[in-house]
Length: 212
Ligand code: SF4
Image: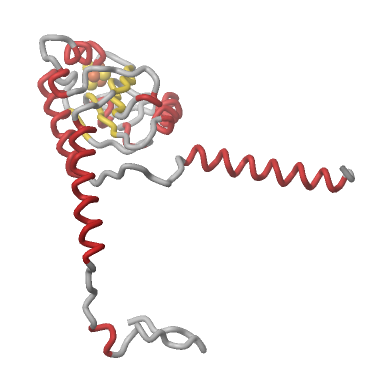
């Protein structure tokens, strides 16, 4: 057990008999847990059945993407038929095709622009691992720059595989913890805030210096 160093008085909760006191969950804690879990389940159910995807299509897998989206395979059954061509309205980034190193910052930028909660599917072996383009120019998997939730193998993958990947993602969405609101700011916004604070400090410093 870690002991406090120097002259710091030992906390009554560290050591002694008090550490053996079991933690009691109050009825309020129980109730919050119950409602949080049910709310999370409902949000998970709603989110998994209303996936708006952003297709980041770069190569030949695009043909199979179109096939998977068309009427024959009817991806609308899974609530994922509407592509959104702005990342801010999408919650699933589908990386369809080869990503080269020069495209990586663009992919990262698109991912950062999506709002939480968001998920990523690597569509085909090129997006998953670089595929057979084992060279200096090709990114060896999209997960080198952004987190990927589901990998769909194949060159190109069959539409059935895409649907299978989508169902795996739906299970993942259902089982993760959802919150109705989050207080966390996106990193982009934090950076923006820090830049504005710096600018404000610089302006006030210059104002004082110039006597304004
Ligand atoms: S996985 Fe195959 S079909 Fe898909 S982008 Fe790569 S080479 Fe083209």
